[in-house]
Length: 327
Image 1 (cartoon, helix red, strand yellow):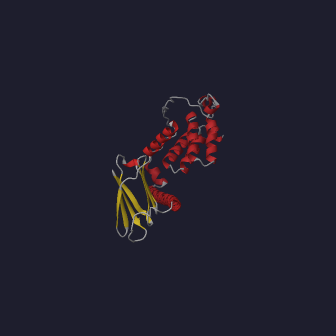
Image 2 (cartoon, helix red, strand yellow):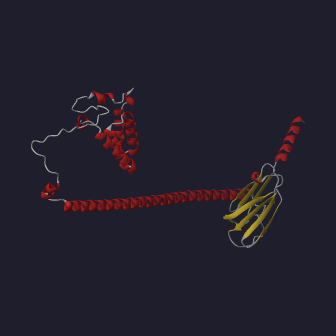
Image 3 (cartoon, one colour):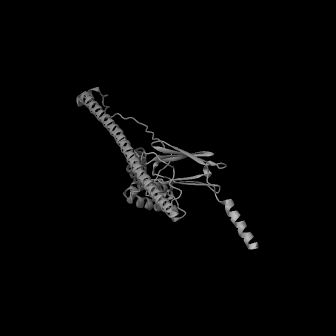
C-alpha cells in the first residue's frame, strides 16, 4: 500500500507540472493566416515562439505549450509574430494562395508520421537559418570591402588635393624667385650704367696730399667680450669639455644615433626621427643626427620641421671649428 500510494503521488505530481494547451483562435485570407494565442501571467520575453514551414510552437514554460502541425506549408521569410500580452499574434503567409479547411492536420494522424513531419520541418528551418546567416556574413564582407574602397578613394582625393596645393605653392615660390632675380638683374644693369670712368672718379675725388705732409690717425678696435678658442690656437679641449657626459651606454648620444640609423635603414622614418631627437637632446651639436632627422622629416613630408632642422644644421656648421668639420 505504501508503494502504491507513492506511485499515485508521483503521478499526481507529474500531472501538476505538465504544460497545458492555451486557448487560441484563427482566421485566414487568400494569402495569410492569423492566429491569436492567449498566454496569461507571462512577460513577453518569457514566451518562446518557433515558426517553420509546416510546424509552429509556442512555449511559456512550464505552464503553456502549443504545437501546431499546419495543414499546408507557409512562407517563413514573410511570416512573423508579435507579443502584446496576454495575446501572442502570429501572421503566417501562405506558400500558395488557397483556402484552408482547417488550421492543422488531422489529429488522428499516426504519431510516427507527425514526428517525421516535424523533424523534416526542423531540418528545413535549420537550413534556412544557416543560409540566412551565410548571406548576412557575405553582405557584411561586401559592405566592409565597399567601405574600404570608399576610404581609399577619400585618401587618394586628399592626397591629390595636398599635392595640388604643394604644386601651386611651389609654382608661386618659383615665380617669386624669378621676379626677384629679374629685379636683381635690373638693379645690376642700372648700377652698371651709373658707374663713372676712372677720369671722372679722379676729378671728383679730393686732391692728393703732398709728399712731405704727414698726419697721425688714431684707430680704435672694438674690445672682444670673450676670447673664443679657434683652430689656430689648437685648444681642442674646449670643445671636448662642452660635450655631454653619459651616465650609461643607453644615455650616450652614439647609442641613440645607431638606433636611429637602424630605423632609417628599415624606412621607419618616425622611429628614426625620435631616436635622432634623443641623441640631439644629449649632444645638441651632433650635426649628423640633425641632418639625418631632417632627412626623416623630408620622407614624412613634414617640410616645416625639415627646414627647421636644416637651419639648425647650418647654424651648427657655421659655429663648428674646421678641425671637427673635416672629421
